[in-house]
Length: 384
Image (cartoon, rainbow, N blue to C red; front, side, top):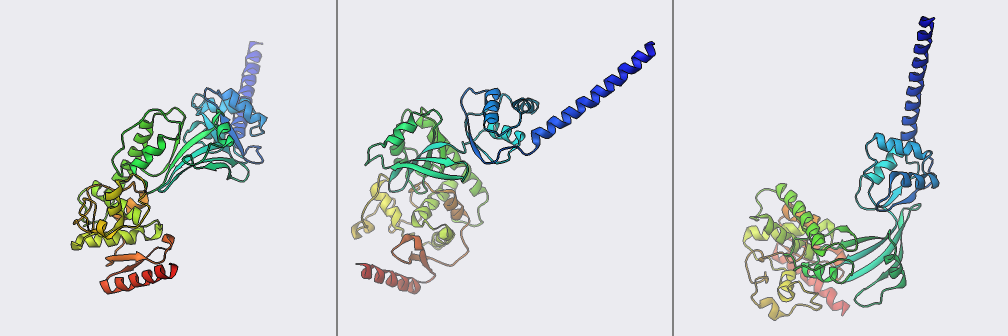
C-alpha cells in the first residue's frame, strides 16, 4: 500500500512540476509578447511612485494585460526598485518587458508638457509645448520673449503642475556671458555663478528641475564640452597648426561664428588652417567684434574701419595666429571641423548673397576672391 501511495505522490509531484513549468513559460511569454496598447500613451511616473501604482495606471490605460504579471516580471528582472520619475512615451504594442525598461532606465522624459528655455545668439525665448503621443509631434501652447513680454497665463499654469518638465536649449555660438545672464533670469535655478571661460560650455539640450543649482547646470555643460573636445582631439587629422585642445576650441569658435551652414564648416575650417600653415593672418570679423563686446551682447552694427585697424588681442587683421581665447561656445560639428578640415587650397571666402543661409564662395587666389567680393558688393548696392 505504501508503495502505491509513494507512486501516486511521485506522479502528483511530476504533474505539479510540469504544470508549474507550463505556468512559468506562459508567464514569461505574456511578459515579453506584444502588448494590447492600440495607440501610444504618455505615462507619468511621479516621484516616490511604486511599481504597484505604475502597473495599476498601465492596466487602467489598457497598456498591459495583467498588473500582477507586470510586477512579477519586474521583480524577476530585479528592476522593481529602479523606477525613475518622469513622463514616458509608451509606444503602441509595447510588451511588459519593454515598458519596465522604459520606466527604469532613466534619462530625459520623452512626452508630456515641457517648458523650454531657448538661449540663442541674438535673443532668448521661453516655449511651452506638449507632445501628442499619437502623432509624435510637439504642439506649441505658448512662446514669449521674457525680456520684452509678460508671462502668459499658459506658462504660469504649467509652472504650477507637478509633472511639467523643464529644459534649457543652448544654441551653437552663444557666449558664456549670454548663458549666465539668461540662466539668471529664467527663475527656476538657485544661486549664481561667475562667467565661465569662453568656449567651455557645450551647446545642447539639458533637462533641469526647478530648484537645481545654477552652478551644477553650468558644470554639466562644461563636462559635456570637455568630453566632446577630448574625443575630437584624439581623432584629429595629422599636421594641424594647433598645439593644444584649447587652440582647437578657439579655432572652432571662429568657424562657428563664420558659418551656420553645416555643409561648409569643413571648408571654412580648411581656409583658416591653410592660412595658419602659410603664416597668413586670419582676418575674420567675428574676432574683431568679440574684442569690442567681450561677448556681452550683440554689436548690432557693421564694423568701422577704425575698429578693423585698432590693435587688440582679438583683432585678427592686426595680430598673427589665433586670438588668446575662444570667442563663443562652439558646437560639436565646428569642433570636429576644426580638427578634421576639408583638404583644399582655399585661403579666402566671402558670402554668396545677403542671406547668410546661402553660404560662401571660396577661392584659392586673390584674383578669384576679389571677383567674388565684387559680386557681393554689387548685391549690396542693388539691395540699397
